[in-house]
Length: 246
Image 1 (cartoon, one colour):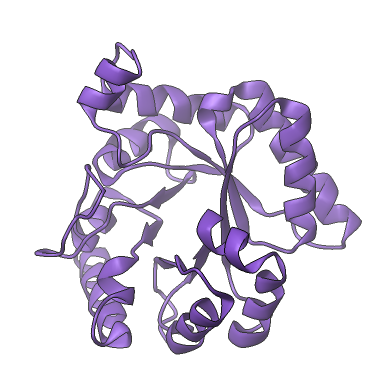
Image 2 (spheres, rainbow, N blue to C red):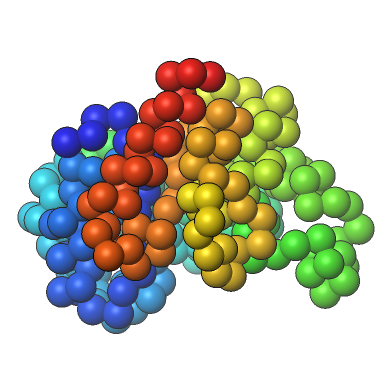
């Protein structure tokens, strides 16, 4: 058991059996599990209950749904997600303040109706697969990646969201802009020497923790390793050393 793990492990598989096997193998080594669009669409929402059976009723499930629609539609989806007992879910900050406020309010309603705690609602700022050339050249955003992330994060905070998803390279700027209690969930974390895959803006676990990350989304360096448990423990050890030594 690793009580201080900051790892949210993506269960990016195409079957419930594979996901549950990973969860069974790594529960206790990670802080929680990220369930994204591939797995939900392949296995269905019953997978969330199965995860609670395998990893325990208090397992942290981050539903990586990235809701992005008109406020009324997102409110309905957020209400339903909260009733499923997830610990956290996300929306796209680019959906705007009204949409994010609707998600937060509906999540509270859905949780109350089921006698549950309200899930954390966090906002996606700029995907880690998007770099400056994509943001400016393809999407026509004139400000820098960091400035755009900060703009969206402040909007999310003002809209009642609990935190944001952002790349490691924006952590320090986000802490300065949004304070110490705003939850930062950081993908694009890769141990030194690991293949970055389709992530463009990456950092090692130790660097991300020193910068101020709350949770580290680390997937393939753990799940594709010959020994996933040993790989998770190495990430935890690096994060612990960074946290303890500043």
